[in-house]
Structure formats: C-alpha cells, structure tokens
Amino acid sequence: MFRRKKKDEPTDAPPTPEVAPEAASETAAAEPAAVETPVAESVSAETSAPSTDAAAAGNGAESAAAASAKPAKSARGNRVQKIGTVASDKMQKTVVVRVDRKVLHPKYRRYVRRTSKFMAHDDLGATVGDRVRIVETRPMSAKKRWRVIEIVQKAAK
Image (cartoon, rainbow, N blue to C red; front, side):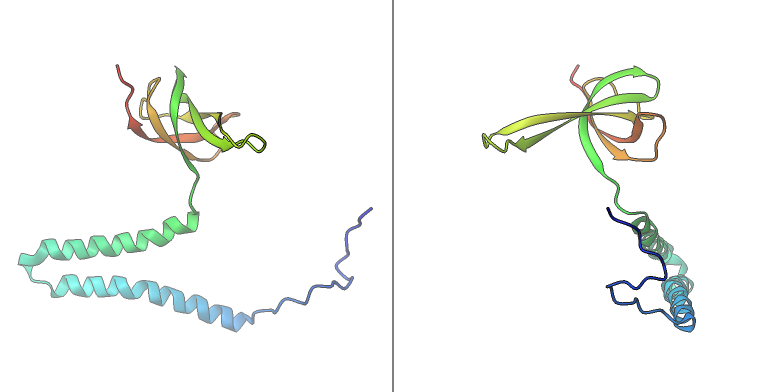
C-alpha cells in the first residue's frame, strides 16, 4: 500500500522558491495606490467640470464605480447558471426546475435527451411552465442549492 511521506523526508519535486517578506509588502503597497489613482482622477474630473456638465461628471463617477465593482465580482468567480422549466411550485418559496440537455450516445451516435431536476429558491414567484434561469448558491436546505435569478419566459395561459 501507499504511505504518507513525512515532512522530513526528501521529495522528488524541486523546492518552491520562497518570497521575501519585503517583496511581498512592496507589491501589497503598490496595489492600493493603483486602485486609488482612478478614483482620484474621477474626483478631480468632477471638481474641474462646470456645473452645467453635472450629468457628464455623474456619468464619470458611475463608470469609475462600475470599474471598481468589476474586480470584486471577479474575485468571487463565475457561478454556474442553467436555464430550465419549472416543473412544480407547490412549496413555499421553492420551485423544482427541470433542465434538459442533449448527450451524444456513445454506441448509437444519436442525441439522447437527459433531464435533471433542481430545487431552487424562488423569490420572484415563478409558476409551472415558466422558463427560468437558476444560479448555483450556498446550501439553503438539504436539497436546495440553487436560486432563481430571472424568469426568462412566462408560461402560456
């Protein structure tokens, strides 16, 4: 069987280079300065803009805020999104979403429909037959790990 290597035992892999603490603090100090620079420019642009161009200065502030919001979202990562049809809405604030996908059969080389059901938290009030977009989220109950973020198409009455 296999056994774990102890910390003292040599390994085949080359040792990883250690970063000096001074270099790490220099890079950490350089990043906040780079982040603050666009904010300072937008503030100076707002103060230099005349009062008649207040709307233009406001758009500059919004674009700076949007630019600063993008890195925060990318730090979280992209969450998995799926589009499916609501199969059941009998629970309170929970819907069952059926997601269909087509898979190529390995032997017959034909596309076969595979269906998965997901329980999703629903604050939007989706009903049976609606096409919804769900996004992966933290566990909300034993089976519920998805959240409805958009009703793509309402069901035909």
